[in-house]
Image (cartoon, rainbow, N blue to C red; front, side, top):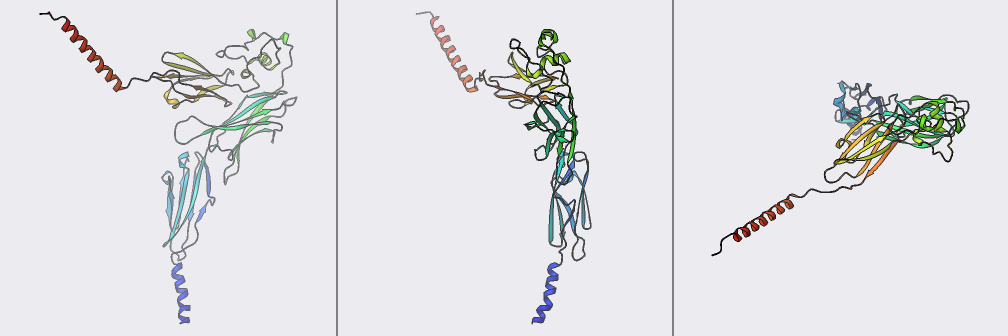
Length: 398
């Protein structure tokens, strides 16, 4: 009996192992595989069965139709060509030997990291404390653990700066997927004299399974202009510093000196937004028009800047808009009640925003159909009553 069991045990084990095979081999082996927008990538999966038969291997999952899958004896290759944001997702390799099936999921991460950095202001002035903003455009993913912005002096981070925070905003675009612009701001201490080495804003993206990628934007540093006594400066009315918001701000050296130097108590200084050493801020003005309201967002920052509307109650598509460089108009037309909520515009480069909250002030809801019909019937009854009385009064008495 024992000899029979000894003979049958290997046979039973062999039957149990029949159809089974080795593990799935996936290249690349990482659970997350990153590919840049427009680039191509291949995912290969293999499995061998223990009995020598060819395993059935196939890539499956969402969006596999966006790539080319070629499957053969014991292997399957998923090729993604000209990757787009819609190509991202979970792809699963399924390998079967007989009745034994193994699965290996792989997340395909499609990222966008173009060399599109802007800084505001474009030039700094040595010897002055100033604020600096750096923006990376058309980025995804944009989370802080993936994308970081830093300020470098040579190859080292600039010391003594105050981090004012990092924010992200969706880029306006057409097509599939979402791209973002990420802005970080710093408060800089007075830079040394003479001007230091070239400063750079550096954007770095770190993704699993890839070496970090970086882009740099140089920032020039000008020597501080020589101090000039206040009584020898050209009056603001002739230098063009105190101009209306619609007039381009003078950017000459004389105007820069007028804007950044200290003013006497009797002479109010120009707005901080006009200074060439500080990022300027957009402003929103409103003016009534027949049947509505017109909002104007503008930034008196000189050439090379633009403003655009980024938020409105009910979505921007519900409004008439016009954008022209440093000015952007938005027309609010209402029937009954004006919309309530936040209107927001944004300055590029720099990323500063202006917001306006509009409260409903004009409300005249239209008359309901039932009320209108009731009023009509009442008017007809009154007219019939008056007509009958008038007819009876005009009848001759007998």
